Amino acid sequence: MQLKLGSVTVVTTNSPDMARQFLKTHDSTFASRPRLAAGKHTTYNYSNITWSACGPHWRQGRKIMLTHLFSLKSLEAYERVRVEERSDFLARLHGSRGEHVRVKDHLSRLNLSVMSRIVLGRNHFTGSNNHRNDRSSGESGVLRLEEIQKILDELFSISAAFVVGNCIPWLARLDLKGYVKRMKILGQKFDEFLEFCIDEHMMARNGQPKGPAKDMMDVLLDLADDPDLEVKLTIDNVKGFTLDLLAGGTDTAATTVEWAMAELMKNPEKINTAAEELDRVIGRGRWVEEKDTPNLPYLDAILKGNFQAAPGWLAAHPARGPQRLPSRTLPHFQRHFGPDQPVEHGSEPGRVGLSGGVPSGEVFEQGH
Ligand code: HEM
Image (tube, rainbow, N blue to C red):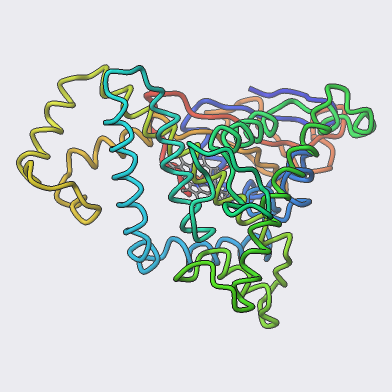
């Protein structure tokens, strides 16, 4: 569907075929991000990866993540953290037996705890205590889970809000619905927390140990000191990347697992088949480990099917240049569009972007 939002032409789609056109076939044209208010105010003026335009900074950011976080070596090194947190998660769920629980809250807590330990070296989020980001207390730098969850929920909802100034720039300074004000408050909250974490890491570098091993923030701070990096990494970049990891790695994974559980509950025969596979391959005497995955093809297929059925949200993708799209899937797009240049057959100047998701049940290969 094509929409005209102020001076911006937007395409939304729920067709996997169309999404493939934008995200795979014409990836080089649509790989970038628009400069929207959310990226400016919540992530240090587009200093992170998620909101940064396609270019050397974005490429370098992705390379850093791939090398230091998602490489086989790093994934293996952090497995212990995942195992420990998963076992705490299961113990908490087991402890709540007989009560109504919101599974998503437990999953979010699990993911936040894992990401916090991997990225910041320790768990900064607690479900039981009431410490604030108080540098004078013994347990400083700890946020209550409800608090961080509220902050992250606000981040996701405000990033998806319709901000008039994004489409009608001359109205931006009026902040008609107050979203920008909320973004600035949110940015401030993140900054207080991240400043604390950076201070803690800096002190550790100066001889006040904070923990045994290097975490992702240590790696980023080392890189910020590296004069040979292709693109200089600033402290704002360190904060922006950290935020990407905490926000990107929490809600997405929790929603995906929650979705999978809901789908399985609707299909009990699939639960039985999966349970039968687990009994046969693993038995009842031990927990499933990550290295078991290749031996559990049915469970693996459930996970892959779930990613296809519920690939999650997409951030907006602006066009970087003219692009002809196939008439078969988008007849009214049989013309060229480009950023900040007139639409060929339209009367007004426009930019084209893509946003949207793919509905449940449709198959779409989502690259990451
Ligand atoms: C089930 C888990 C996850 C799902 C379903 C998911 C989904 C997505 C989607 C749909 C996008 C947007 C892609 C686009 O617009 O082209 C994205 C981007 C991103 N995700 Fe995830 N994600 C997951 C886990 C994670 C984790 C664990 C992390 C970090 C630890 C993460 C970090 C990011 C980052 C940094 C981006 C921006 C990448 C870029 O702009 O190049 N995600 N994710």
